[in-house]
Amino acid sequence: MDRLNSYRAVVRRLLERHAELARQADSGEVESDLVVSAAHDRFVLLETGWVGGRRLNNVHLHVRLKGDKVWIEEDWTEDGIATELVAAGVPKEDIVLGFQPPERRHLTEFAVA
Image 1: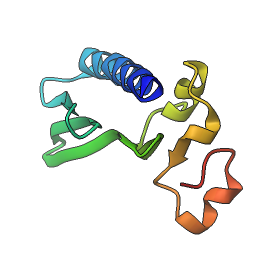
Image 2: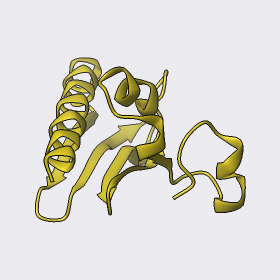
Image 3: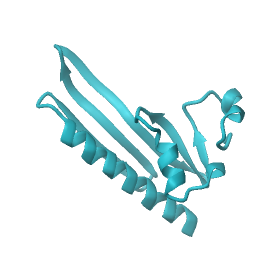
């Protein structure tokens, strides 16, 4: 349980940092919001607004804790949140790239599930 509490804190800290960076870059027409469900271990960074007359409603980052692993469901960051998780002490074998098809996950350096 201590490991999961540690992962919760790391994921939350990293996504809060990404949310702050996104807010600094927000224009008047686009806003970034961090949505956290502590009860369900879900962390989502959203971008919402208007760009060039078109509606923008994107999931920029989506990370969840499932079982004893950190699942990255969506990641549009420049360097990848997985890299930041590893740098923060989360072992690669505890990170699943959920956005990768299950049959291709074994080709990554991370957990398959």
